[in-house]
Image (cartoon, rainbow, N blue to C red; front, side):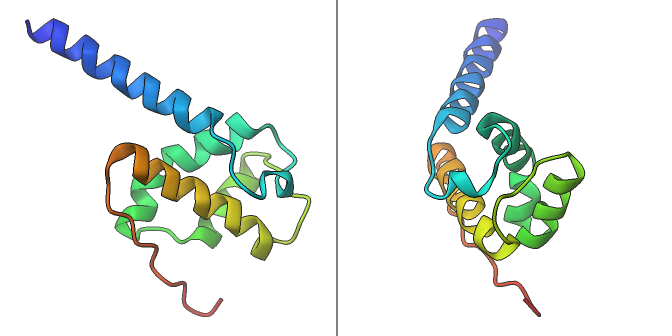
Length: 104
């Protein structure tokens, strides 16, 4: 019974991840790397952003460090990343309020 519940939970997680990776957000063209690559980075850092451990600017630096390239300035790239974060929260049924960045 427990094994069955774990498999159901894993299947739901996988379905949510696929939903996020395949969801189109406005401004995706600002990021020239393939959509699933950068969305996977955003997805894996969602909890850190939600807790306030890192800012959007720091997330963009992480993305650059992982060879995600941008076609626009960081200030414009923030918008599709923020929209992706909001979609992740919606799919996960989490209330998500982005904290304002200081000195930006």
